[in-house]
Length: 151
Image 1 (spheres, rainbow, N blue to C red):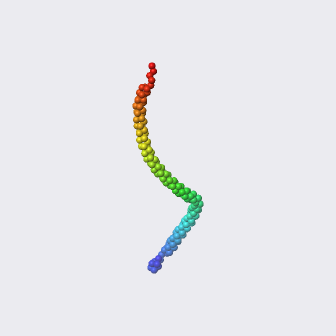
Image 2: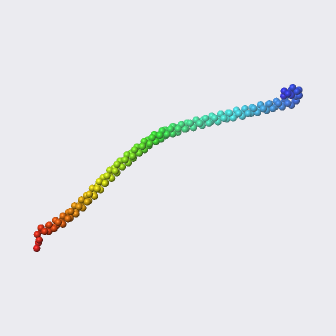
Image 3: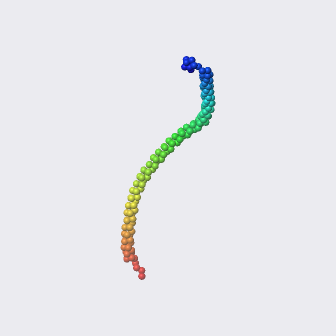
């Protein structure tokens, strides 16, 4: 426009056209500003609603979170108790196994001694029975000789 004024050539339609275009641009900026303001207002309303929903979730979740925390504490306590009991069972099992091994070893030794004693006793009984039979036959012969005969 400055060039046109300097050149001295000014058309009659340029000024109103520029004014109208500036008016259209200004109105466009006003529409944009109004749209941004409405969007910001709507966003603020949505944020308030979201804030209320979040607060209600917090109010509802707070007891649940406390319950979960107490349950977690109970779970940890129970896990520790189970761990201790398991260790005690393992220790008792080891002690039982060791005791059983000792008793089985002792029982094997007793069994060996008892087997030897039974074998020796059986041999002695057989020898005594054989001796008794042999002696009984001599005894029978002596008895027959000493007994008076009946006629």
